Length: 245
Image (cartoon, rainbow, N blue to C red):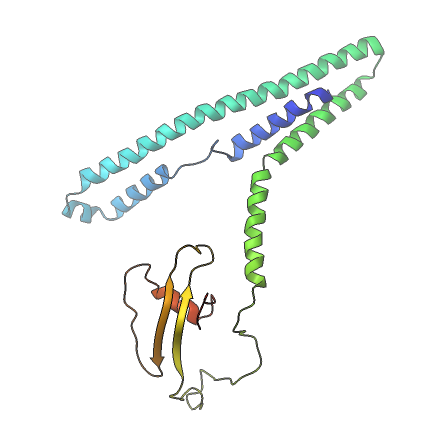
């Protein structure tokens, strides 16, 4: 029975991948979700569609996404059905082999039936459990990578410690505070370089020099991705600049 353990483990892994999805087997595509979104938006904005005479174009887009989803699901259904059938053949084939050899041992060696059943079912269920656990190996690796990024963020120490008890404190609720009314307070970006940690190859800010005096209203204007939100993220200490201050 131990000779069938690799087959049973493989069958358990394939069965788990088919049921929960893995490596393209049983995974969902985005086409059906996009089609549902288009249908929902079309119903909610029916008057707008009629005013723009966009009914036919919306219908064609919906049909295209539906047919794309049908094509993908048909292929995946065939693949998942094939692998599920193979896993079933391996599982029941191993059981049949175990019970057949167990019957031979009972007949020729006088093995007790309960001992044979314990051995067969013990190996069978253990191998299936091993196979199902192996199916999550990839997920475990991805979880470790995600956890590493989270703990790296938690352990990061900012150059400007917000919990440091030193320095002056200004109350945002007290308008008479000397520090709050100090006209010498200003926001300064001096040669700031910055790229987001998860996209270090994309330079967001390069040599930014900006000075905003106290009491002045400033608007940051530019295209999407120009660094407007990044400036506020740096001001709020969500990130530290790569260079400058």
